[in-house]
Length: 229
Image (cartoon, rainbow, N blue to C red; front, top):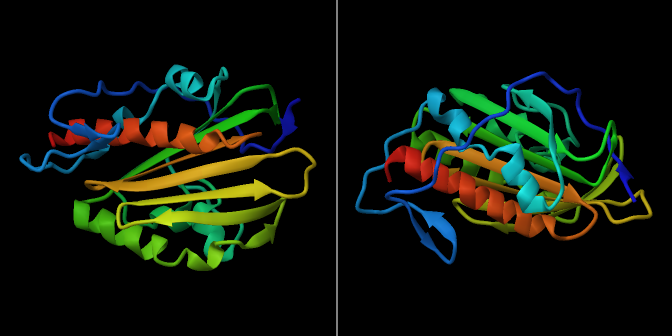
């Protein structure tokens, strides 16, 4: 059974390709990590689109045919307000701030119109250097504790949970509480070199948590490859 959800208006744009993942980055337990023997070069605006997974790759990860619904180069504004605004969606303006040099967010979904069972958002923001990205990431994630367990109502009613915060990553979820069926969005953000990447998967079960891990592992690996790390 499909679940009704609102999406922001679709913008016409070309689908993006992802850079091949190979070379100097290493993996530990399936998670991409930089090789400390190499010095990572900062990514530039021209590298941004190569971080993203394609619709076909995302469709394979979530197990549903996804189509592009939104493609824009500015962060999402508004949201739930208060301490949960940065994690209301991936690519929120209250998460990425205004110090980035380039930004991109893509939203994909199955179904038609506002009726769908899977919604996937991926975003990336490139900063002048790694310290700038790290400072922005820390300034946001350090203030998320009051959002844990918070219940907020806007266009829908949501209950938020902040699952894990480290200097390099944050995991959260929000579950809609005003519908009879389960509808939960799992989100995650990571700072990698001079880039903050985020992803969120919304669906009617808890598989979104693993979906987001897979998406950000691949996005992280692409960053390390582009960085020469």
